Structure formats: structure tokens, C-alpha cells
Length: 596
Image (cartoon, rainbow, N blue to C red; front, top):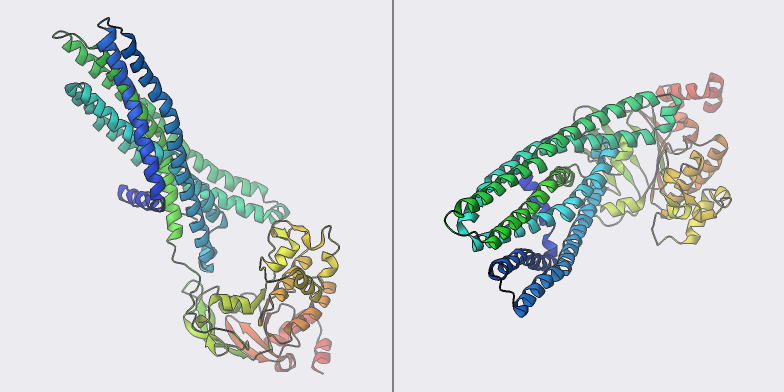
């Protein structure tokens, strides 16, 4: 579960600069957007000055010549019409940049997830990862789409307004600048408070996603054991904490956003009116200048309010980005390959004194050594937790090992490119995973080299064609998420067909027939016998009847090999294998028949 951490000012700046680095590839578009933004700001600033000229130079003097006034009115109207088009293109360009940036960021995050090692997935809930890739990147998108563009536009507008104010009256503009420290103080206070609240909200949202994902995946178990109320209570507790964090943030918004800024605006208005009231005793008031200053004050606080209202989105984005960057910086990657060796040709497998621990404290494998010659079959048996699947995990390079070595064709598996290992090893797990798509897609797994004919041959080879052809659309039948509409046996048959279609040199079976009924298992065993011909095979077996013809059987206990031999040799030893056989077959008479 993610821990709630609060980002200090330095960390927030680091995150912001890293986010802005994503904009560097779009320098050309950014320059165009800034030009449009500058033109739009100039148009907004010129409007009140034109009105000031009309009031002070013409209206107050009672001098109303047609041509100058027509030109002044045309200029005022033209600037506003032109500003509409300029603002549109400026907004369009900033939005385009924002969407391209977030598109790249999502690709980076998803690509990173693909490269993470299994250790990371062992300790991170799936829902938390989904939250990083979806909710957090969406918050970052909002920042680029709404916040950055607004901040830049507002900054340009503020600078332009102050330039215009100093142009109109230097002394009054200097007085007006006294409000700037107040605005900076309010923004700083809001940033500090909201950072903590948004971090808490993001973590709670991640926990909600994790709990939801877990509940959906285990719905059958939840309903079977009547755990609905417990899960509802746990979900409600997390939801309550998310609500509490949200309420704290709403209170900060309610105090420090619009109300506080409106108070500063009122103070600024008092300063302007007081200035003109005092100076009116000494000299006439320039009505046009008064209008322009009040107009500029309104325009000044409009971008300030825009920035303040978007500070909340900014804080959400910074917090979300820190979580995304934490994922991008994750060092728990999949094992690296040197890539010195080129091809796996024979398929000989050898473990040399391999020891392994998942947590770095307790070894789950100790001094494992064995050799499987090309084309031979090796089987592992043992009680739950004996280390059978851990051996497969190391062979498949799902986890890194530091002690001992694993060789294929007398070369360390670390020397082969990962693509070569994946292409030459076929893995069938106890719980077959099917992807959303068609049956053919699941057999091919988007390897375009595998033709439709080869897909059908692979299905026929494992006798999966009999049920596939009965489906409404045959091989084009749509597979729902995880293949939930198929029986476990049907899913496993499709997984076998997928493996055969890839034509691996090494076959790895992790209790591949454990979830299949007896009738289907007989057909599968026939298919497996054909599959093993010419292939080195490593099989983990729960039912000893499925590996009796293995060339070598290794018995594991607490991470160590305690017995090895053929089926007959192990029965004759009358050790752990002998006891397991008795438990599964239920009588000594059957044992005598087997030995005899």
C-alpha cells in the first residue's frame, strides 16, 4: 500500500521542472503559441487605453469629430474581433502541446510497467498501478491543458497591465504594487496547505482502486464466503478517509481562494479611489485615467483569480506527477541479459548450486543442481511451498538470482538475449490467462508470422479444435476478460495451442493439467506426449500419475532436492515420493502392482 508523503517546496520544484522537460520536443509549437499569447495580451491591454483617450481627449472636451472617433471605434472593435481569433489559435496550440505531452507520458509509464520485475508486482497492488497510469496521468493532463496555459497567459496579462498602469500614472501604479506581496503570501499559504491534502487524497484514491480491483477479481470467493459486508466496510473506511482529506482541502479552497483575493481587490480599489479623491483637491481628475485604472484592476484580479482557482489543479498535478515519477524511477526491473550468446540450439538445461530468496532473508531454494539432456523430460514433485514454482521462475528469468548459475546449452541464461529465451521456451501455467480478443488472437498472441492454418493445426494438435469449431464464430469467437466464459479445461487447451503454435525448443509445464477433468486430461496427456517429442521438458506435477514416464523425477522439500530418480526407483526407495504416491492412490496393493 502506498504511503502518504508530503512534498516540500524543493521537491515540488523538481517535479515541475521534470514535467516541463516533456515540453522540450515541442519547442516550435510552443514559440507559435507564445506569439499568439503575446498578441492576445497586447489586444487586451490596449482596449482600456483607447477608451481613456476617447473620454479624456474627446468626450470631456466636448470635441466629437467624426473621422478620429470612427477610427478610434474601428480600432477598438477591430482589436476585440482580432483577439477572438488570436485567442482561439493560442488556446488550440497550448492544448495540442498538452495532449502530446500527456500522450508521451502515458506511453512512458506503460512501457515502464512492462519492464518492471516480478518482485515489484509481488509487493504492489494492481489497482495502485492502474491509478498511476490513469487517474494520475489524467491529473497531469489537466495541468498542461488548463493550468500551465492559464498561468502563462495570466502572467503575460499582469505584466501588460502593470506596464499600462505605469504609462498612465507612475505614482498610482507604484501604490497599487503594494498588493503584490499579499497575493504572493496567499498563494504560498494555499500551496503549502493543499499539497498535504492532495497527497493524502491521491493515496486514498489509489487505495480505493486497489480495493476495487481486488474485489472484482475475487468476487466469486467473496460471495461464496459471504464477505460482502466485510469488503463493504473496508472500502467504506478508505472512502471516509478520502472524504476527510477532500473536506480539508475544500475548507482551504473556501478560505484562501476567491474570498481572500476579493478582500485584496477591495483593498486595491480603496487605494485607487483614495488616491484620486486626495489628488482632486489639488488638480482636476482625469476621468479617463480613473476608468482605465479601475478597468485594469478588474482585469488584474481576473488572471489572479484564474491562477488561484487553478492552484488546486496544479497541486493535484504535482502530487500525481510525483507518484508517476516514482514509478518511472523504480529500480526493481526485470533481470537484464548480457546478450552474448546467439541461439539456443539443443535445449540442454543445467542448474548449478542455485540458491534463491524472494525477500533476501529466507532461502526458498538451497543448492539446487540437476541436468536435463536435450529431448528429455524432468519432473518436479513436492508439497506446497517446497520451491517447485521458484525453479520455474528463475529459469524463465522472472527473477534475478545471485548464487549459483543456470545454463542452457552450456551457456548461462544471463548470456542470451531475452527475446531468444522467450522464443525458445514455452510456458503453460496452472491457471491459463486469456486476453480480450478472439480465440485466434489468443493462440497467435499477435505474432503475425503464425498463419491461420498454423493456428488451426496447433488447436488440432492439442485437440482443442473440437470445442472451438462448435463456438458461434469458431476461431473468430470473442473472448471476454480472462476468458471467463470458457471452462478451465477449455482455457488450458487454448493455452496449449498457443504454446504449440510458437514451436518452442524447451517446454515448461507448471501443473498444467491440475484444473482439467479426467476425460480432458487423458486427451491432454496424449497431446503432451506428442509435444514433448524433440523438446526438453520440465514439468511440475501435483498428480504423480501424470509424470510417471518422466526420464528423471526430483522430489523437493523445503527448497532442497531430497530424492531423485525414475518413478520405479523412487517408489523402491520408500521415501517422501513413496508416501505421496500412497496418499494419492490410497492402498498398498496399488503400490505393489506399480513396483511389480
